[in-house]
Amino acid sequence: MFAPLLDRIRGKLSHWANSLLSYAGKITLINSVIFGLPNFWGSSVLLPKGVVKKIQKMCKDFLWGIDAGQRRFVFKSWDSFCLPRKEGGVGIKEILSWNKSQLLIWIRKLVIDSPTIWVKWIKAYVLKGVDIWHFQLTSAYSWAWSSLIDCRDSLIQVTGSSSAAQNLLAQPDFKGIAYDLFRHKGSVFSQHKTLGDTLIYPKHAVIGILAVQNKLPTIDNLCRRGLVLINRCVLCKQNSESSDHLFFDCPFSANVWRVVAVWLRITVVTRWRRIFSWFKKYNKGNGCGKSLRRCALVCTIYHIWRERNKRIFQDVSSEPSTLIWRIKYLVFLRVRGNASAYGF
Ligand SMILES: [Zn+2]
Image (cartoon, rainbow, N blue to C red; front, top):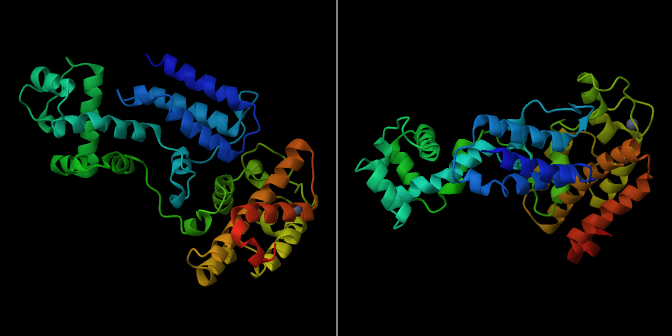
């Protein structure tokens, strides 16, 4: 029954698999493909766990790539990877939680006694005078109806009672609230204000969030998984590559930071902790200068990572001055009206 759905998702993702999309581009595509294509399926029946697992696998393979049948590398937990950005994830929706929140629309129709033929039919031939919250499911009912009752039970479980569930369904924005109820939760990512500024380019924000949490596939991370044997920084060709070395200690990156720091009138950054304590202490709020600094900070992280990848995968290298020019140019585009005030 779900083979056409899986085929369509596979077809869409494989169409883009060999393109040079960034992580952020791939994440955007996953969100649009997964939560666009199966809209009909996802809002009609509860997707079986096996189908959800297959869709997740396709997403992981698409995101991280496949080498000789094996995924290049994996994160510890897909659930933590899917969390919203403010909780340290990259904002991919969880399929099952999203599916459940979509199905609630049908239960809501029954709860608010929506004037539709479907509601009249269900009340007359299925519920037969029984309240939806007290309806007992038997094996005689269809899969679609069983899905709704499973979803009802999940809602009662997460809200605590049928009356709390009923109150939630009465709210106009219940679908957003319901998704949050069903999904996995993470602790609030303390740096999300700095990394989530509206001026920051989305793809820069994704790399920034992963970099801060040491979740990028740096060579030391790949060595730990046994995927790479020799650890050598591609930027300086002298030291081992770790997140701290790549983004701060490497002479190449230090050269970039030195100029960016003078431009932004901030102290030279040497570690994530110092960056965020500086932002916390001196750079609260959302004024243009503050947003510009956040935008430039994350833009610099992104371009160091991009330079590293271009050297590894395309055998193309740039000087620090080229990166600095590009960082200034991109930040300038974001804050065009106020750029002259910041010495661009
Ligand atoms: Zn280096």
